[in-house]
Length: 95
Image (tube, rainbow, N blue to C red; front, side, top):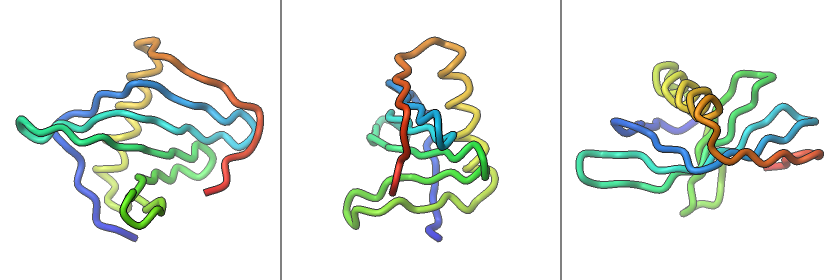
């Protein structure tokens, strides 16, 4: 597990929904004051787990802090209501 800090806000650009595995891949940016960081997220709707991509180590790290996890989940739910591009894939996501 990795300690993870979320930014002040998250702006999601698109979602990829893997129908068979109930996983959602989300791409967006986090705002830290005047700085923006590109982030990739993976949500497992079946287990409630949320992961973020660590590009340096090429791994997915679980978001263990409940408040951070909930912050990300809420932004993904809000993005789905705002009708951002959602791509649906029939298949599995193996990370």
